[in-house]
Length: 185
Image (cartoon, rainbow, N blue to C red; front, side, top):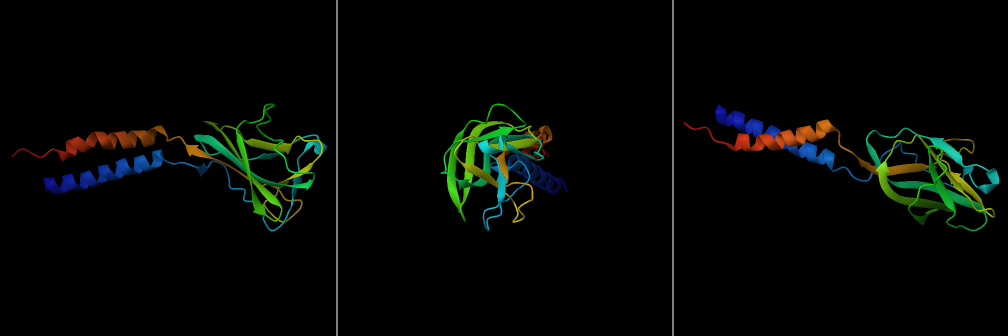
């Protein structure tokens, strides 16, 4: 009876430890809603020097998220592509800094990835615009409807485990030596 109970308890503890470890190791997840772009053709909202302001999109972040990358899609209607694009969170006057890379998403649409220093994500608004005076840049929409919102972007990062997750994992680890002991007859 005792041996069966120990086996069952051991399986439970190992499962708790492994589950806690898995929850603690999440990486490169979406930390906002998934605003996937419409890639069937160019369709977006102008957000450049000509509009005199950056188009702003609201979102709901995931709790306990650490921001690592900002990904968005856009296209040029006039002028050549350049790296004069700035990303702002929550109406900040200072753009995010990081390494910007671009790649073609097809149909004249470019995917932009801004790799930023890891920081807690508390923002609920994102604004992206091209500050060059000689281009017309559009932030790609999520549908083919020209008046539709939202625009396409995703915020990627990792989740900070909640204290309960750490407690579950550490408690399970602490119980492993106790369960390994054999009863003395």
